[in-house]
Amino acid sequence: MNKTRFSSSAAIAGVLALSFLGGGMALAQEGRDPAYAAARSAGQVGEQKDGYLGVIGSQPAAIQAMVRDINNRRRAIYTDKAAGKSTIEEYAFATACRLISQTKPGEKYQAADGSWKTRDSGAPDRDARCP
Amino acid sequence: MNPLQLTGSAPAATNPAMMSRIRGLARRFDSRSGGRTVCAVMMMAGFGSVLSGCVNVTAPDKPIVIELNINIRQEVIYRLSQDAENTIKENEGVF
Image (cartoon, rainbow over all chains, first blue to last red; front, side):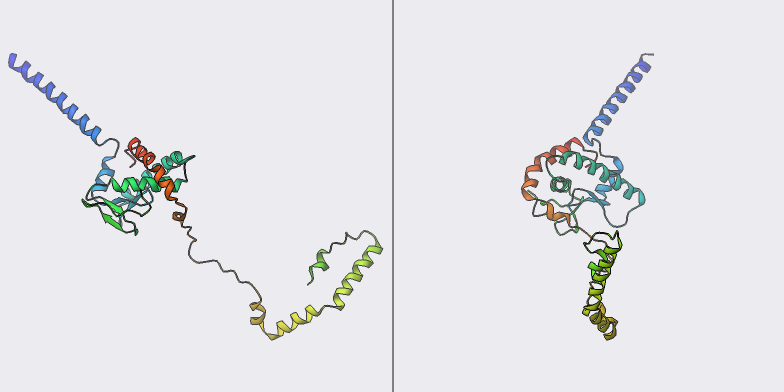
């Protein structure tokens, strides 16, 4: 009796610990959809120099649809944020400069000459107009 | 044809007297229409020479691309940099 009570409380503690862990992991990856995160690290999509996401090479329709959706949302954000400050293109470009700097090694980005590059440990090859 | 013949500034004919005035105008143009002869000569010289006097407008087969990058002003990019950073942080799922 005593033994079973112990094991059940241990199980509850385990479940609690797991849920905390899960919550912590979800917080670390905040918002980024797992499919999107996977496509990024697999180099199927990359950061363009105009502030939008690009599909690299030929990818499944699901990836293309995901990129279109993300880009629509980005455009909405750029449009909203640029209001009264700059053109949408300028705001998107300024964001791209930051986004390319923030790419992780292994992720793809569009270099100043327009080609796709894989981010390494060094500084990315950004457009000369980036701050 | 001389455009004046068609769209002359004279008021619209409303009585016979005015009609005769318009006819007179038309006659005057006919009698001194050297332009018509030149036109006929050009026609005879061949279709090519007539065409050479035209402005040909051909639609391009490729879509017209407007390079928007030229509109990006560097000082604006500098000013927006921090703002852009905040936007990225606020919308992590999209970036």
